[in-house]
Length: 256
Image (cartoon, rainbow, N blue to C red):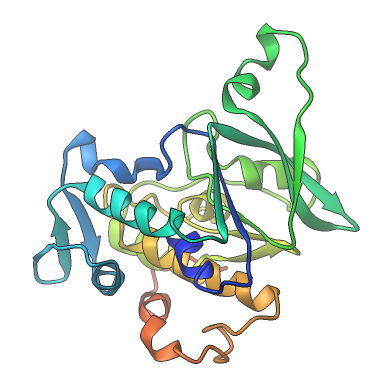
């Protein structure tokens, strides 16, 4: 959602959000262990300020009283934009690849994709695109399906899976390793941990938001549009939080 929110600020780019669940947002509707509060490590609170979401200030993090306040707010702003279309309850069950470049996704109803073994075949549809951003997360029936498919078709060598929990190291690594892993496909969020063997992060959401912002600017760069990655974005100073985390100096950060 943060990626779609950031990239759709450019009215010339059409954004399709493909969400296998009925409710978009992944695990961002709740905090840890299904509790209400959402913990966001600074400097991602700047993104909350932009969205107008209130929070309680702590030393190096902030707390939103209910995670759903973040998710519902960003969705209401994002889906109101004329260049954004949400396809929920839809699974991306395969990739379109042309000349060694990811060129879109193969889609089907999520319930159909989950039950291919229990019913007769239902052929999918396709959505072609110039850039695909994969944010399939980890665990679950659809976990890391983007990078797993890249491995199965030989476009990447391995998907080692995420390592054990280390929140601060994970947050730094997720943002720093968000990138275009193969031509046409950018990986963001916890799916990055699956492809790079970074630690899992647990119930803290700062890197999720900032990784999405960074992915958006990587996509803008791939599309030849002004972006904060190469400094061509006119408001680059205002969208710098992703580079604060990405530049964190620690020997524990996973190398790309």
